[in-house]
Length: 357
Image (cartoon, rainbow, N blue to C red):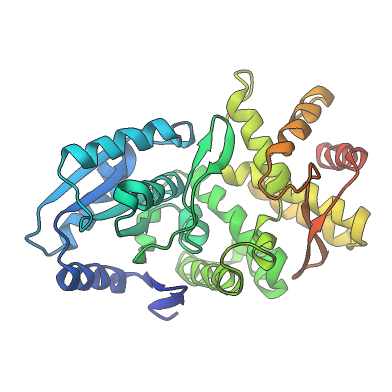
């Protein structure tokens, strides 16, 4: 078994029933004027009833439901939620509880951080991706058109509740999407954890909770040392420079099937690992292993030369860019990342060629 909580910066991440105990303690001690639950259509149906069944309080409570999915992670949805809060009588002492995947926790955190200049919020991530990634670090925000997370603030919740039983409500592809971030945590931080992820087929469902716990620990250690992403925290963007561009391209192109975040990041990690070979001397054998392992879980996508050019153009909007230069996170070895790497564009085309072949 693993511990019941992890101390993050100014708040704690709670696991299993301890999370619901925290929720009731917080509500009893703080006595918010009103409680609002924000959920999307899926989590409102599958997960909100469980939260309501354990929430012991006489404080007035309202549910706000939004549309599910990345296409709705934008400022128009925020406006709808801000209006709903206002019309339902939310004040500065109200509490917002976000129940959902990364879209709900990112957007809900941003709404709470800006409504009346900030009200307290608690995140209850219900997807694997949100549990291992969005649960730690205080990043909130929304997309600007197809450009990922371009508008937002860093602001911590009062606490995070991780209840792995919620994962039973997820489609298989959503579970896989979350696994991409777990693979990433191994690559940038811990070769032993990477090897555990490589041997997932030998693990049982009982191991999933401890893997989630380890993943949160890895991210939390990075974020605690660099909360505002001046240096070390940039390593968490491994695979994201090209991955986000691929995700944005597929989101805005009507001729492409939309990719889940983890599906796009998995491609980005294969590309970044190949670039690590060319730029930093990373082992080609281990690069082939990364490609093979991720290929077991994520379906290969095809890209034409013209599409790759368009994807490279979208990288111009990456938040890590400085002075017009695209900055990559690359690997010198597993567990040894290097930030702020500038890569020649011709190498990016070769990386796609490696991925496609």
